[in-house]
Length: 217
Ligand code: HEM
Ligand code: HEM
Image (tube, rainbow, N blue to C red; front, side, top):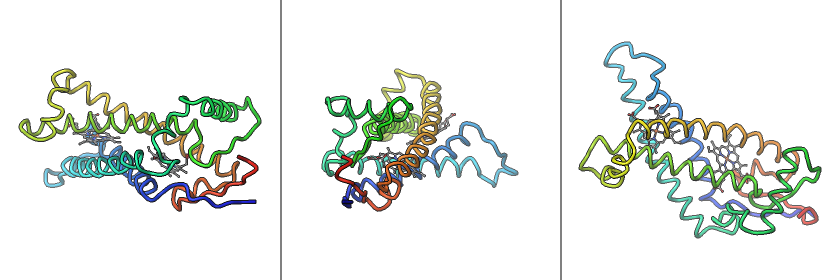
């Protein structure tokens, strides 16, 4: 018998979509900052100024969204807990991750079922959250330079004495491509699982609900 379960609580869903929009906007405006691909017809056009303004505004929104999600790692339900992102730490998690890996690589016919994140996806998400933090640290470190007696320079000023700013820019830039690569796989996997598992995983990130067949678990 099909059961309907509430899996993703509101903060998980809202932060997911805020993060997704932020990554898109920050990638487009960031790419423009590093490589201004359309010219300004005159100085009044202020294109670079607007791109930088939008980049920094969304950077703060991204920071706020991640603070919400990190709080929810600690106080959210079982499925959104930080523990779910380290499946390799338990025997059952490792076993489930291997079954998913075999399914994805066509070496195992069994289609596994999970109520929350599938363990392989959860490991990828742990990597993605690390990349998010890396973008925040490198981004705010570079940003802080505009005001050497300001808040961000106070936090990341020491980092700038260890790593030169061009290296930080390069890391910041390359991380954007890593996130883009993740997204291609993420969209494909979510779609594939939606079709194969038929448990409403795609709509779950909007509604919070998934369908579960007890016998499949
Ligand atoms: C997913 C998140 C983000 C992506 C994909 C992203 C992407 C980029 C890219 C591609 C560049 C151009 C780097 C170059 O080639 O020189 C850039 C520049 C910059 N980003 Fe981000 N960014 C993100 C988040 C942030 C955050 C959170 C901040 C914090 C304020 C930030 C601050 C900056 C600054 C200050 C620059 C300008 C560097 C300069 O003037 O040379 N970014 N960003
Ligand atoms: C069309 C756009 C997108 C769709 C349809 C989508 C779909 C989904 C779905 C269905 C889930 C939950 C299911 C699962 O356990 O795998 C999920 C989770 C997640 N997605 Fe996306 N996603 C999109 C864009 C993005 C983008 C742009 C990023 C970041 C680069 C992203 C990062 C994540 C992360 C980190 C999670 C885990 C959520 C958590 O527990 O905190 N997604 N996504």
